[in-house]
Image (cartoon, rainbow, N blue to C red; front, side, top):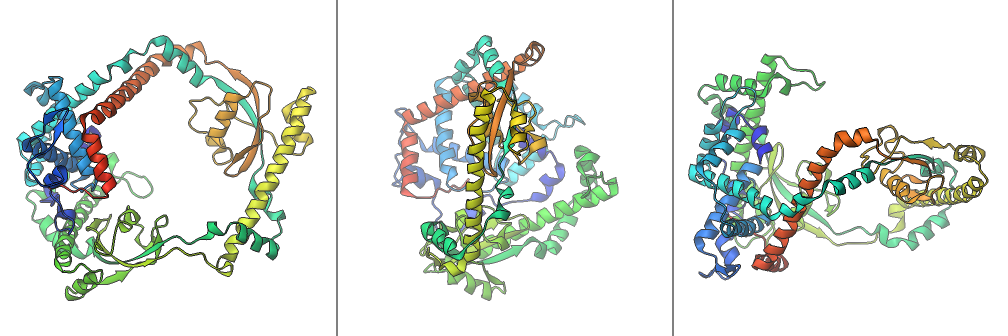
Amino acid sequence: MFGTIRKHQSWLWIVIVGAVILSFVFWFSPNQTSYRNLLLGDGGSQFGTIDGRPITQEMVSTANRQAALRRFLFNRGENSGSDDEQQILQQLFLSEKVREYKIEVGDAAVARWIQQNFRNPQTGQLNYDPYLQELRKQGFTEADFHRYIRQDIAQRHLAQVAGVAGKLMPPREAEAEYRRANEESLMSVVLFNTSNYLAGITVPPPAVEQFFSNRVSSYRIPERLQLGFVRFAASNYLAEAEKEFAAIPNLDNLLESTYAQQGAEAFRDSDGKTLSKEAALVTLREQNRDALALRVARTKAAEFAKNVYDMTPAKPENLEKVAASSGLTFQTSEPFSRFSPPRSLADVQNLTEEAFKLMEDQPFTAPIVAERAVYLFALKNRLPSEIPPIDQVRTRVAEDYRRSQAIEMGRKQGMAFHAAATNMLAQGKSFESIAKQEKFDAIELPPIAISTQSLDALQGRVDLGSLKNAAFILKPGAVSDFIPTREGGMVAFLKERRPVSEEKLKAELPKFLDEQRRRSESQSFGEWFNREFERSGLASRLQARQKSGEGATTTP
């Protein structure tokens, strides 16, 4: 949360966002269900128990409100769908544990939290009031926010208490782990890249047909969907946004203030050069105007969605009918599978996930916000899985055949080289001379350790994970078996291992020990949380609801 708050320390954003309807993406949905019924299951007055203690309606309401506030702070109010119920249940659990452990957070701690997270480090200005004003526009009170802060502080303290075992890692154990992770291996490799063999592969038609016959399931076309949709482009509402934007009091001062807070270095052109102040202010104005236009598009989409949802019975063609009566353009997507989203709708994140949830009696998505538009989708066609005739995929099959033969050729050469290298190393020859004799290039690699994250000089040519595994297993002076990789394969030779220097150990061990203890503390808390959440009975309730396939939505 701290990173999110610091990233958006801007008066201007607070002013122009306006009354974003937190729940608009599901408020009008035909599947909308109150959080109370979701948690109750039967809509009665019994909320169940947590660790044997009755869950009251007030506890559920408070947890739901905290989840909604968290969603707004993290996700700009976007509904997170089925995760909401999980957040509410976890919030109930953590609140109960805070009470059980008697963790109390005073006003002074809340004040420090606000000072730490809302003070601009460059100017020293406290930007708390604008955030408070925006929260009020969303229906939250200052008391709600202070309750959230108290809970955040308390839960962090709870994590420290529950994860205290992780802090007990002895320095000697951390030192041993540091030495292991930073011991360097000096290696050479011979590569057998598939691309080196492709040109020499012939592709006879009978072999291609046999290849297809043996792997026909690989060419099965998966189930596909075709969606109808209406797009509310933010650019269509620029005039309306411009009018509202221009009416903001002291707009120029707000722009100047935002520019000062973010700093000149935050505004760059496409070449990475810092913009002049005048150009930066223009950019800032356009960005915020465009954001306001997208908000208007969201509102229009919500109003349109309500008209679609209100039609009974719910049928996919209702979307096209309402679009026609509203003077809006109805469009149809190309067919797409679960694993290949439509290219024309690449700006819509998680579209396939939402689309494949649609059913005949529930054919509409909620409005989905993209970067420059808002969409409402309806299920139009569901195309069953099928196996295409070979003539339809012959080119693809031929290329797959060619590649498979090249891989096999590289594998055979790699295994033959491994056998030759093993014999000649035993005779005292060097790995480099063996590679030269066998007409291959031996590539000397930079030192590799378990802690190594990348090999920039050989990016894409060798597989770092495979090299680490080989270095861990091999003895100095030994050669690896043929190691298959995404590009073909390789044979690796381990020259020697170098222990980490005492100077480096002395300089980096304190930080490493601190990181290991924090990681261990987090792991200990995670294990405690999973164990206690399961014991509380809330985990089984959540699992039962997930198995039932019911989505969860909430209203703040």
